[in-house]
Length: 510
Image 1 (cartoon, helix red, strand yellow):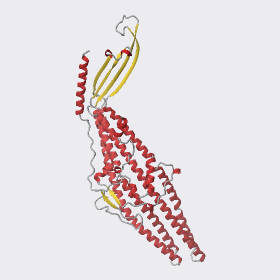
Image 2 (cartoon, helix red, strand yellow; image 1 turned 90 degrees about the vertical axis):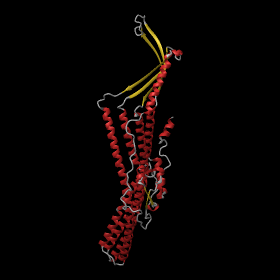
Image 3 (tube, rainbow, N blue to C red; image 1 turned 90 degrees about the horizontal axis):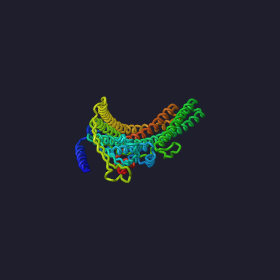
Image 4 (tube, rainbow, N blue to C red; image 1 turned 45 degrees about the vertical axis):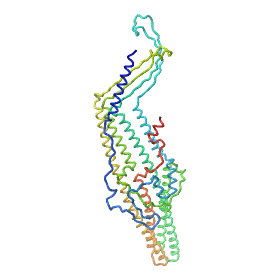
């Protein structure tokens, strides 16, 4: 029984040689390198976006400054200084099913990645068996043996199987799943950013609708007073019945705007309820108004070189490109030899009392190499498919980058236009109000016609509603800039998912 040690020594030597070769080998397929950021100086041609916007003499009309390279706080919405918005977002982060779904998707990706890492290690299983068998003499090589032979066989063994990652196929599989986890991580960040941005925008829209309803009520009240004056003049013979009917029609037209505005307000409240994970009938969020919001005066403009690292959607497409690149390596490795080592060591005896004796030792070592020779072109076309998929991912990445830069540029133009429009609209509203007051006074003294009153009322009504919308649009586009720049997720301390870190997930597994 002396040959056994020499066989074991040979086995150890072979394993050491193969392992050394494996460690020296490189994984097949291209190594991923993140695309470089576009070499551009900014988000708009030089001189087309002023460093500071116009100002308007009303709350929220302060000038805003664009600060190049200014960082974005992780909780950017606090810059609006609205405790109601802060509370609503806190509730949404705790209860939003959309965010919870994104967190669960990331946890799934973490677990799939952790499971694939198990391919780095041998597969080991234990086996215990008990067998009783009846055999004929012929089966035992004794054809003339009288009758049958009954025997027992007890087995206890450990089986080991290991596929050597000689060409890096397994490493590329893990790499692809790491990229997939990265994708879901930034999908979660994108969900977080979309949720918080939608809440801020919805709150601004609610405040705008409340202001429009209030302005419409004020206008209707003024028109009712004018109707009363016209009625008195008709009674005194100073105005015609036609004047009275025209004024009444104007009042009713104004009041007809209120049901639509109130319906929009109710729907906006329902949207906020859905965003925070509440049913419409159970939503008890605070009411918002424009005067309670503060306008951030210093607005960040990220450096283009950093911008591609800050946008979650760009990072998502970068991860997809990484995954597609790794798939090329996987497809290439599938075309190359697969080396598998299997071994078994155990005991076999007729009874359990003898199973641990030296005579009961049994073992086997098998090394196999499998090289695909012919599969009808499947492997070749699968690799070509992987290459085409990587090219598609690269094009989608480039398109996402272009769209993201366009998004920021559009928002910068919009903010500049919003400020100019707000200043002009504030002047128009003030002028229309002064004109209406003057014509009303003239009408009372008989120096103005009723047609002039109607014209002045219509002008003021349009100007007042337009001013409310202009104020709200400036707040909304300010929030849109923070969203377009990535929302400052890199400055947020709290984790979005408790087990979103693959390393922490693996520690928990061990």
